[in-house]
Picture 1 (tube, rainbow, N blue to C red):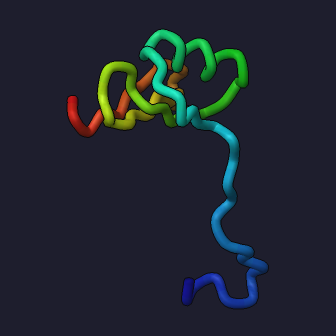
Picture 2: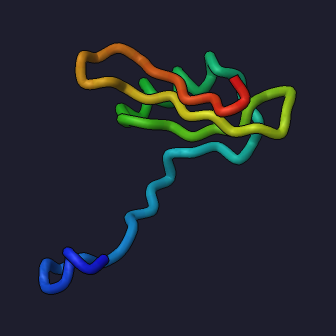
Length: 68
């Protein structure tokens, strides 16, 4: 990125905060809590879509589900 020149930018950080095996929303929440992660990407059970559960700054849980 142009604004990152000289700031030691090494590119995106890839973290294992995902499941490519289809899981339920409830299991995704458990994984989020167990790993004390801020976000968890998962393949939705019963479909081909993906979703993300995440922890908001106020501590509540959010869900991004493009197929909603």
